[in-house]
Amino acid sequence: MKIIKTVSQMQELSLSWLKQGKSIGLIPTMGALHSGHFSLIKQSCKENNFSVLSLFVNPTQFGKGEDYKKYPRCLKKDKKLLEGKGIEIIFAPSTKEMYPQGCSTYIEVEKMSGALCGMFRPGHFRGVCTIVGKLFNVIKPTRAYFGQKDYQQFKIIEKMVNDLNFGVKTIMMPIIREKDGLAISSRNAYLSVKEREEAVVLVKALKKAEEMIKLKKKTNVQDMINQIKKIIQTRSKTKIDYIKICHPESLKEVAKIGNEVLVALAVWIGKTRLIDNILIKRKGVKIA
Ligand code: PAF
Image (cartoon, rainbow, N blue to C red; front, side):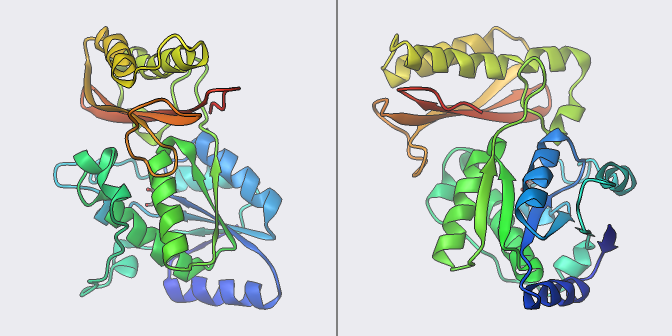
C-alpha cells in the first residue's frame, strides 16, 4: 500500500493499470475511517484488480459555519487501519493540489440537489459533485463505491455520471449500523455520552415508519411524518431539520405511499447533525 499525493502521479498510475486491462475500484472518503468504509473497501477489493481509497476533506462541500475545520483528520491512524485490507493506493492530495489557485469550475446537478439536505446545506452537493467528478478524472475508476447512509449523495452522483457520461459504475452499499442501530458515521465521534444515547432515536423512528408501512397501519404520509416526529421529540437534545417520505429515484416527496419509498431524515443531536434513511418496500422490506 502506497500513499500518492499528486494528481499527475495518480493519473499516470491509473493509466498504466488501464493499459494493462486492469479494473480500478475507487472508495472516495474524507478519512476518519470506520466500518462503513471498510464494507466499501471489501466490495471494491472483491470486484476489481486494484483499489484506490481517496482521503480528502473537501472544503467546497462545507457551508459557512459548518464543521470543515473540526472535521476529524487522522491520516496516520487511517493508514494503520488500512494495512492488510487490500487497498493498493491511498490518494491523499492537499487542498492546493485539488483546488489550485484560480480553480473556478463546478458541477451542479439541478433539482435533486435542492431536495432534502440540499434545502439546509446550499451548495453542499455542488461541492460533492465537483470533487467526485475530479476524483473520477484523476483516478479513472471502473467502479466507485458509496454508502447508503448518504442516499441523496449517491443518487445525485449517479445522475451526474449518467448526464456527463463519466463511464464509471457507481455502487451503493448498505448502511452499517452499531449494535443498537445507530448508523455509523464519522460525525458520531462528536456526540457526548448522553447525546450518543439519544441518537438511537433516529433509527427507532425509521423502524416505526417501516412497521407502519409493512403492517399497512398507516398509509397517510402526513400522519406517518407526525408519528416519526413525535418519537424523535421524546428526546430532549433533538432538533429536526427534516423528515421526508420520497420517491427513491426522483427524491420528490410523495403524496401517497407507493410500492417503494425512501424515508429520510436529518436531525440535530445537540450540535451534531446526523442523517439516516430507510428504503421500504411494501411487499417484503428492503432495509439497510
Ligand atoms: O461521503 C463522503 O465522505 C464525501 O461526501 C465524498 C463522497 C468523499 C466527497 O467528498
